[in-house]
Length: 295
Image (cartoon, rainbow, N blue to C red; front, side, top):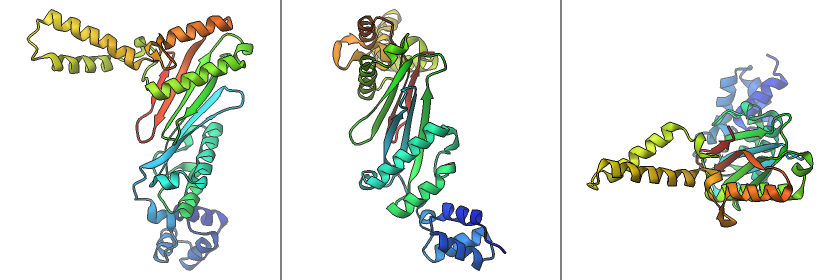
């Protein structure tokens, strides 16, 4: 049976073995793919296959914003140890994954071990670095046609937290100004530090608020207070909770006397037009993402 280049490529992607080893294995088993995998494993050549079951709980997050500032990407790639996560080879891999997502979007990247069109790249990294490597998640956001603004990203030292923020304005001149770039970068830093989950209070789902109310009521059940007093206490704490989780209501990290909304208003007056946040996204290594849209 003829061994084609496509067969060799698929076997290499699956196992991480070298090209010549894959070709020889396929020839020996007359093209039987699973037998070829087994053959390579028996010879100790199937590096990626041998490591696929190992826990990848370390890694880093990478961000990428396009040159025109209209598209932002966040990716999380996991490995087994922090030592590998800090190597130049892993950093190069992070950049390649982010670049792929910026160009193709995240839909082609399956969660877990199967990373679609990037699997061969991942397998090569597994073979070289000697650890299981997974693309944990990836997101891309782009300003819509006709929408004016820019995006900025922030990666916390160590690569365990990553953020991008999209800021809208009225004119292209302001969108490309250093002043708006500074606002966007400061907002990204704020989101990294304050970890909001929603942009503003009216975008928080009722189910989230109902769950929080149940928790607060349970905490007060043995207080002996009348129901009308309990209701006022819970309402007050819900308002406090919303200020904690909604970006626009949070105290601005660079000036806690201002809320983020007030800061944007003041910066807008300085620039001569309204500034608003249309989207933000925050990744923390090993945790779910936190995102907010203008709705």
